[in-house]
Length: 240
Image (cartoon, one colour):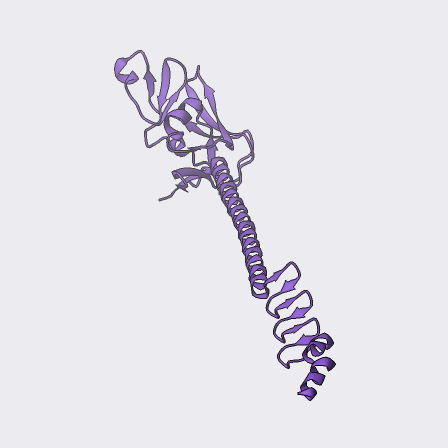
């Protein structure tokens, strides 16, 4: 829903927070854009002091403007933490004008700061939706995403390092087991190889001990000497 006021430099249109007031023409800094008006409420009167709504604009401790009337187009101006306009309050005249504090381009939303009390009572509980606050929230979300990504990458790097250490430890274990198995198969101990049954130069497979072959019944010279009969024994045989 939009309402066009051709003779005014603004229109009512859809904004992020609902309805808002938008510039239809360029508005110079310092220009009075629109008057905020409505019935004056006297705080000394109990029935008027009891009125509560979001469009009350306090002039003094006694006088307040009730801007909830539909004719008050200025009530559509939304709050902004970094506004392009401000409220110009004239307590003695009991009037309020919205004045530009910077050049406003056609299509820009007109906004002003509602003040600390209104912000705490109405905006803070639901979160301010002005451009400045939206940018802050967007920045915080981006920073939070970046932080989550950083932590994720850090965890992945840590997991990779741990996996590499574990793989290295397992490789060492396998190497140690293989070495132990090789020692067990070779039965190597103190320079003696038992597979070949070689002990200090003596080979038992061939049963050769100090040059003596038992399989081929080869004996040393001393053994032959012991086996040959003496001359005396031969003479006795001949005499007989």
